[in-house]
Image (cartoon, rainbow, N blue to C red; front, side, top):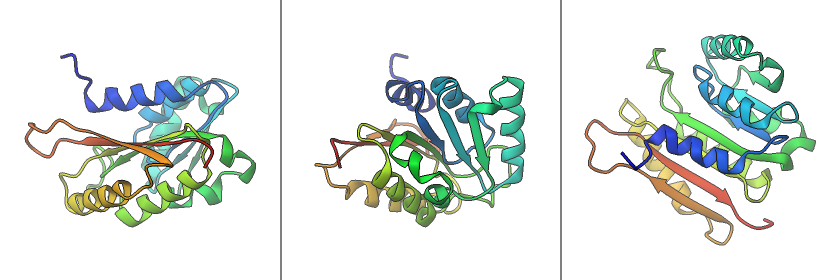
Length: 193
């Protein structure tokens, strides 16, 4: 297939933006695969800040980073992504170049623990206010679970309303697949806003 699948496309977007030395966010670390991917992109001069409300996610991500000898490139926090701006030092805010959110629940985890539209929108809003121009936020939206459609709809309303003079907003989705296929909403911060 010539078209990239959702996860591959998310990583392609990040690869185009994230450079060695950048500050990046994994807003939902899950099993740590995006954290590891970002840690490789930022190299030793950059840093990944990762967030999750589940201790098992932090444990698995720590293990994955350690086994790849990249633990020093990341700081993991057992808190929700709505606290991202409170946790990251203020002098690093304008150095944030990208963030990724995988919305829904932790794969192979407790399906009753899900991301919520209000906390996700707070996190995205705060990041857009402080991140570097040219920075990008990638939202991978899984919505085939209880509460998923509500989060999807709230995110689409919010991102559709962003000022086009300040942000480019892209939706990437396969529209002929069954069983609620995930899709991407990518937000690029334009110019010097």
